[in-house]
Length: 66
Ligand code: SF4
Image (cartoon, rainbow, N blue to C red):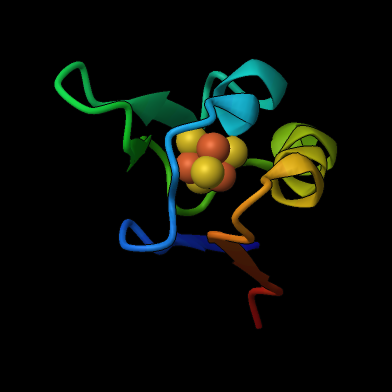
């Protein structure tokens, strides 16, 4: 799985950080998402999918790694 985030769409809601704190963080200054791990291990995939689902700005894109 490959994860990407669109910082321009992110509204700083922080839902992704709650869902998958090992993969997402937020900038201290403005709360915009910080991607900690663009290729998370399998055990985190459920949490990452949840994060993408709950993101109110649809700023998280997931791709299946080849
Ligand atoms: S849930 Fe979406 S809008 Fe909220 S901080 Fe994460 S990426 Fe940004």
